[in-house]
Length: 112
Image (cartoon, rainbow, N blue to C red; front, side, top):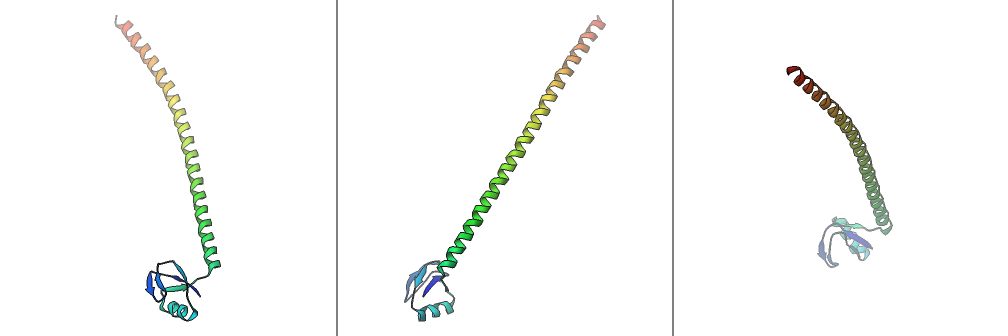
């Protein structure tokens, strides 16, 4: 019988670390299962659970990557908008400076 240790332990079966799978006779295996320190081991179930965990991890990675790509696209659009606004305001500043220079020159001529 194959059993998997829920936590580290030591006995007639030797020193076993948590998560380690050992093979023991049915009598000892049933006794260890009843104590609660071990669980029955099913290789197919373990493989299926591992595959599910890996699929979940891959799905999370892909979702995070899509989120980063969306955020990057959003930031690029915002940056382009800000650059456009900056260019418009730079043109407006230049126009206002010309108007101010013209008024200053007119005021200077009027005072003479």
